[in-house]
Image (cartoon, rainbow, N blue to C red; front, side, top):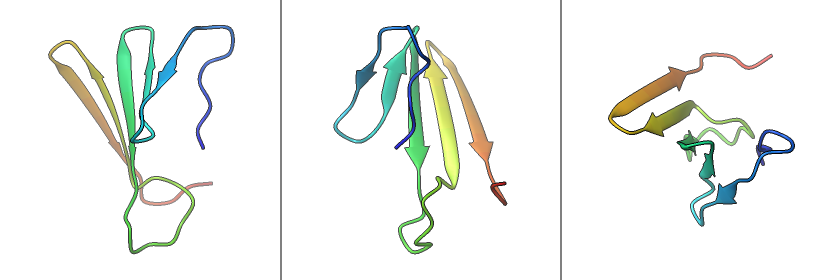
Length: 58
């Protein structure tokens, strides 16, 4: 499970998302991969969406 920034209030959603400092952060995993890391990380705030797509975690 991904941790929130230390010392800052947060709310964890039932779907595993994280809300902190005005951002909603979603961790999207490929159900078939079996990997412990997300395939995609989405950061949402107001009308802005940032998507990080990973190929390889180190």
